[in-house]
Length: 314
Image (cartoon, rainbow, N blue to C red):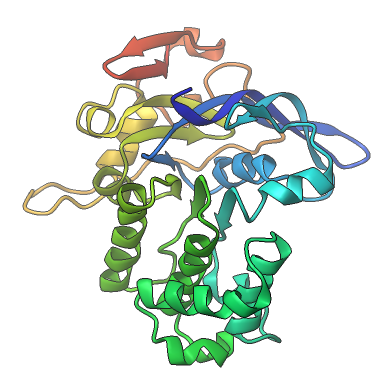
């Protein structure tokens, strides 16, 4: 099996007690081993929700309606919370979006790092601190700061500490959810390079969730483009970014600044539709300059170099 994670026809539904709404609609994603796979799209496209479902942390009232999630050849979609805890934080490590709130402010870094090692029976207490110190050093955090509290660190340092926690447990998969949010450009590059090196040095697969197509282009091997709960295009990153086929992918790329190119930014017209009032056809219809009447119906899946896309027009 070449994929560490396979999401197959995943449907996630919101049930507020009065109405039900499909939030994630028939999403299929394959995460290959020892590579970086990016999930890109605007805020609200469903990137985070898709992968919270993998680790069983969907918000109350939101649940997996159908589909399958297979991790390392094991079906995990219906695992009990007890069995899922053995995987979550051990074999699958989730780096959450906000490093400033991802750690408990009441406990120092040492106690939180040691707790991870002990809760997963990776080592005993006597060796846990040694492993934690070595992991901090590996990500560029001074080991003497291990007894400090989260508020003593910058956002970039906290992100490094979260990566150190991942290194300690040697997971098979890291899900990095907007790992460069609120970080300066230099720190962003340091964090992204750290993640990239993990795939080479530790043979760890990484899911990079981002809205930044530039970061995706430079730091991922494969990419899935999401829009309002659906995949619209997928493939090898360089092929998708350099030769986008779906109008939404094209619009995303045209909306960013390109160094050395004298070209006006073209913002995507309009705003994403409400998940409660979506068309049966292409969800990008209202914002797409290529739209035709046929786009009001579900678009077909078409092959492109290194992947697929879903569109009537292109």
